[in-house]
Image (tube, rainbow, N blue to C red):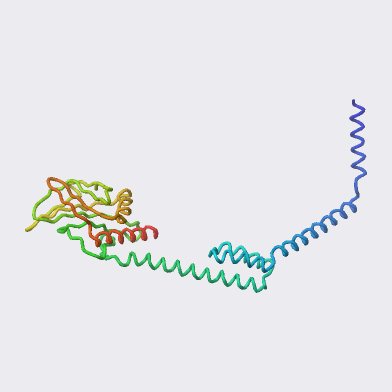
Length: 267
């Protein structure tokens, strides 16, 4: 057994010792490099055949039709690699420029619409507390009225917040301690502290109202409510007052909600 192992070791040492010379090795390396260059040349030739100007432009037309700027840019990158001076490349690039211009115009129009949503609201600036208050442009919600509305506050470097007002005005007190909003049978009870959030006043008539913050759950409800068919308010206590919200009240809530979303996105 030892003789067999010794024989294998001697054979291996002999093979290594009899390997190719440095000159032969360098020759093989050079031949391999030359072969790799030929392979790359053939590969480029095949790619050129597969990416002829007419074939590339047919591919580009699909992205132009779909208004897919990303896909079209990928085809243009192929044009730049294989046929940068072709007429097809010029047409494809022109199409991309037009799509880019249209997209920029769309973004600009959307931005103008977003800003319009904020600018159309009525503003009041409280420079002492550093708050800008935003109110709907359709009506002023006085406490001595039967209305539902929301308004928004924002500090210069802070996020906006919303508040909800629900008010009653009539000849007699209703002493309400519960408040509800409803649309198409979907009812939401408005939580409020009777001693902190509710106010009342009177002259020849009686006024009762609440002014409460809007949390994320009420916000979600309001966004659904403004798209309902019939919107209602109910104030209930010793007596009860029901009211169907007017078109102006609906649009007022919609506008403030839209402006709120705009200002939230800007933060």
